[in-house]
Image (tube, rainbow over all chains, first blue to last red; front, side):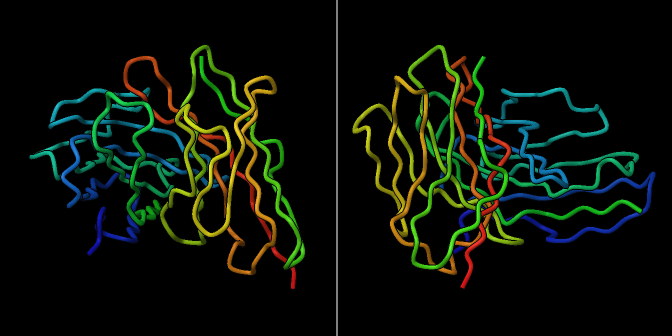
Length: 115
Length: 114
């Protein structure tokens, strides 16, 4: 069984389009995250939700809007895509966000290419 | 502020020889530290974590790491490299300032030579 799943795995689109990436976890975790991995493999957190409530919102353009319909799902919608948005986006989940040593479980990633 | 420095962006070893991937951290608090591995075109998998219990932490696939507070280090080691160990390795510190968000190092690409 896949613990954290993301769709689609690959996404190729034109500049200016709007696209969404979906994430689901079946671990019963309370907290979910979105990360961006750039071309140099650097990983940085974008957002985190705990029980459908936004708890981390890093300095991310407001073209990016996360949505959590329930605690098992965290989707990422991106408006007006730009070339610099090309990256691999990872979803992750953890038991909660009040314990420092809770490990995060990562999805397989979505490779977004903006042409 | 918390930070993590991975001292080597690339490490090459021969199959069967020891692996050492270096990580130094900066933290005002007693940190939680993690090592993750990312194989090509895959997600991240936890190798091991330090949570202020034993300073020598054993992980999966024969990896281990030692927390050294005096040196602010958390280096990852393995006695004998396998070809399947070739991957990107990330050292991570959990930021205790309220949200425990992960702060990643810049990664070390491990190459294993036959």
